[in-house]
Image (tube, rainbow over all chains, first blue to last red; front, side, top):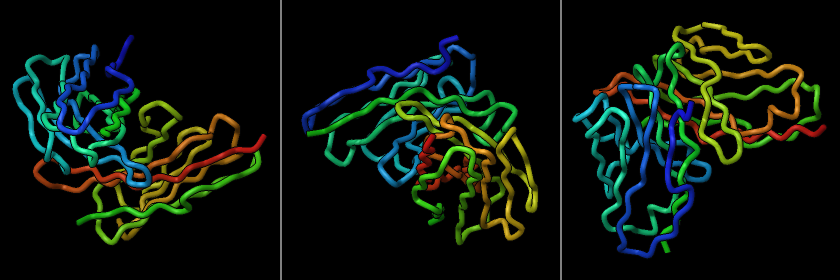
Length: 116
Length: 112
C-alpha cells in the first residue's frame, strides 16, 4: 500500500512565487492534516480536514490555503512564498482524530521547501 | 499558549543501554502521545496515553502519563542501533479541534 504520498520531495522557490504541495492517501481516511516542521520546534498544524469539502485552520494557517475536493487529496497552496515559509512540510491522514492509538495518524515522507 | 519542553535535547548512548527522556509543560493535557521520526521520513506513533498515572508498554518502550497531567516520560530498554531517530512527545487539549501540540524532540544516537 502506498499510504500517504507527498510530492514533490524537494523544492526551491523564489520569494513571491506560488506553488502547490500535493498530498494523496489511499487508505480512505476521513481526516487529513498539514504540518510544518522547523528545526528544534516540533510539528505545527497548518490546516486540517475532517472530510471532503470541509477544511479548518490549525495553529499556523497564515500564508497558506487548502482544499479537499476528494477524500484522497488534500493539496496545500502557498500563494506568495516568503522566506519564513522555508520548512519541511508533512501531510498526514487518519481514520479518526489524531489522538486515537488504534487508528493513528499516518505521515508522508515530507516536502522540503526552501524560499530564497 | 501551550508549550512542551523535552529533555534531553540530544543523547548519545552505547548499544544495550537503557534510555529515559521527559516531556513537561505548564499546561494540563488530556492525552499524551510519543512519536519516533527516522531521518527523511514522517513521524510514527509509538505510544498513546489517555489517563493520568497510566503506564503503557510497547515492546522495549514504556511511557507514563504524569499524575499532574503536565508531564510524561518515555523509557527505552536495551537500546539497539535502529532506535536512532528523533522522539517527539505531543499533548492533546480540548479546543474546537482537539488541538495536538508537539514538543521540539529528543535526538537519540546509538553507538554500536
